[in-house]
Length: 224
Image (cartoon, rainbow, N blue to C red; front, side):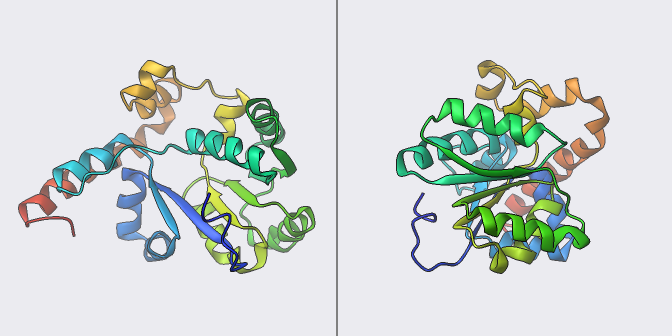
């Protein structure tokens, strides 16, 4: 919340980092630059926590996109701040907004829009956001498109905080069932989603690559 209360007037970017992000960033210079320039990087994924312990730089715990959005909704509700939800299939952002307002009754929803990361839509989307004047902007275009989109437009957004949230709207709206507390406690949301959406298996190839990268870094003497 400290980022949202920054009086500088500059839009702050938050990223949620998982092993897939790290592997992608190693071969995508533009995405790597966005992650490096982010004002706050949250560890979203048990693999990142595991790696932090292997490399003797332990992190306290995960901050998933869904839980972070819910927590921010509670804080924003008490402060009278507002959200704008951008992305997702038609109707999904609206469903997510309804869930957030139920979860945090004091929260104001400044707007929702499905939109897309297509460059030709940027001006109209930004005009819509600026007119709504939200405090927080959550973008669900999927990674890395959402994070690149925020970085490319952050100086024009006029929001306090902008954050890419991937499939968060799907979970909040009920379009995709959220894993039970037991799955979440074990950090196995990725496996739960893979079981329900087996077409995602290609994305899981990043996990063994990430593990090898971590062990190689450890053998070299620490994080690189």
